[in-house]
Length: 336
Ligand code: SF4
Image (cartoon, rainbow, N blue to C red; front, side, top):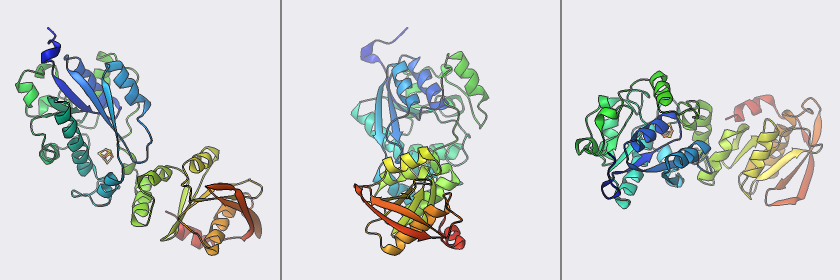
């Protein structure tokens, strides 16, 4: 029998929109719990993904989004529990997110927090001892429910208090997705994204680019968005250049340029778009950028080629110059 609204349990689900968090939220909702979905927008994202919005609509749950900004950037730079195989500070990241979930728990007078975590699915943050550590660090002892692995873990307060029927929770562990796919079929869930295996920080190249960005002066978390696209070159401590590899990347780089960035292209527009990041570049910096644009264009083998550039905030003030080729060794050395 469904509980009446007055006694209805309330829960905050920390979700990514992937299959695991979709299953966890569906299981909790199916027990008559009033569910709030909390989604973290990573520094390189601008909004919640479609899958998150669709899930909230399907479960008729209020969606709370939280943009991870410069505070999160500081965490990436110096995580107490270190990094995983790339530049992913997963333990600190979970603690950070669940502390925010804890605040919502208090504000909304909810009974517990739940996640789509699966015991032993990820070596860094989902082994038994790490799940306990994370729970303690964010002061959610007994109030952090992992519905997909609950039967393999100690019963939580909402289970002990009868707010949640433990017998309807799962005993999934490990990296295989087979049981989740079967459960999805059983729950009638067909529309879910393929497993991504962690966020972009678990990607080696993205991680290197993040490390480089955070080692030098930058314009804050919004600059991370451009780390996803193009070829990256560290010119010196004050400047870096990004070149699109195709038309969509060229457009995205321009769209997300800072007003102080400079944009450079071949004079005949047959080549990549370069975005130069950094304030007040000198002639030598423009010369290097010109050489980069030429190197990745059809004019690569010519002795020199004409390029044009402008400041992102003043696209009508265009400057041109002839650029010679750039030493290939220098190009290699600058690659990030
Ligand atoms: S994969 Fe990314 S989002 Fe997920 S816990 Fe690790 S650092 Fe955080």
